[in-house]
Length: 218
Ligand SMILES: Nc1ncnc2c1ncn2[C@@H]1O[C@H](COP(=O)(O)OP(=O)(O)OP(=O)(O)O)[C@@H](O)[C@H]1O
Image (cartoon, rainbow, N blue to C red; front, side, top):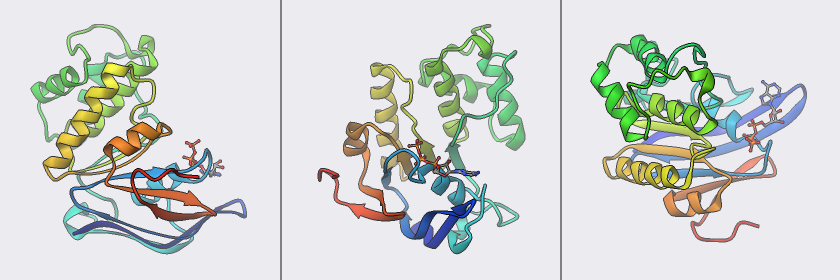
């Protein structure tokens, strides 16, 4: 089942063509890697998929089971694109609680459980303004997974993580795939992509090309 279909999508910014009739499909229960040089349009593609920006031409189709009530925005997506806006003077737990209050689908125990899963201390009184980059990244990851989201759109999920955390997040994502979740991620680390992804799309000449896993990307 295709959860997301990107159909002939083009996007320009200030007259500069970034995406030129891009096509891609994303099936349930697979991990997809999106690769390409800096500025090639990976984050823009993610914003288009999530409905944060609109294509100039073409269409993004989200399977009806994954659309929200208004049908405008995907439902049940866990997203890391740019960092979430957090309240610097509050703890990690308080920030996650605030985000969870939007949907009201999880309790405090689930937030604590997710923080522990990612190596964060839910009882810590430390304010987020003094968090390290890696700790902020873990809060972003916690927000993306804490509500048991079925589709994960993760722009550079391993950024700033130490090696043990990279290993445990990789394992977490592979477990999610086994549970039938769908994951689309970017990483500038080739090992993340090769280890995790069933399918790899690469940006080339403003289009997305499917590359076989394990093949060296020129
Ligand atoms: N809202 C916007 N207005 C103008 N230009 C934009 C906007 N959003 C993105 N761009 C431009 O589109 C290009 C692609 O940006 P994008 O963030 O998608 O790249 P990327 O592939 O994710 O890069 P990186 O690997 O560095 O994260 C960049 O040149 C960026 O400046």
